Length: 155
Image (cartoon, rainbow, N blue to C red):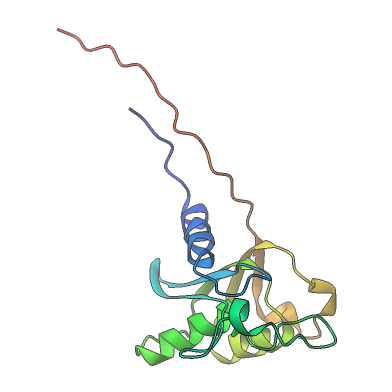
């Protein structure tokens, strides 16, 4: 059986999608994976702070612009988890399912993350952060069915 091996970008983006399934905010399932030198240093998903009620239990507390004020965003959670566990983020790449908001872009920049690879454009028109600092790539991820090839054995 031969299967097509995903590229590293596809692999990390698929992991970001999987991480997003842990989201406790029903408004959007966002997942993030921080990678440095080809290795995962942290993951994060959006949801209420540790020990607090989830959005589904306590509500979104939406701001006038429609953002959930209860949830910590996936990319910020990934940065915070890296810090909590002593993993430096400088020079790393963020793989994220949805493009970051302005507040998260500020945190990402200050954390030294130099590249953002995202799958879904999300309110990009609202950004006021200078994006020239980052290498930006929209990564299209396709889940491919394994290709079964018949092999003939020589006797």
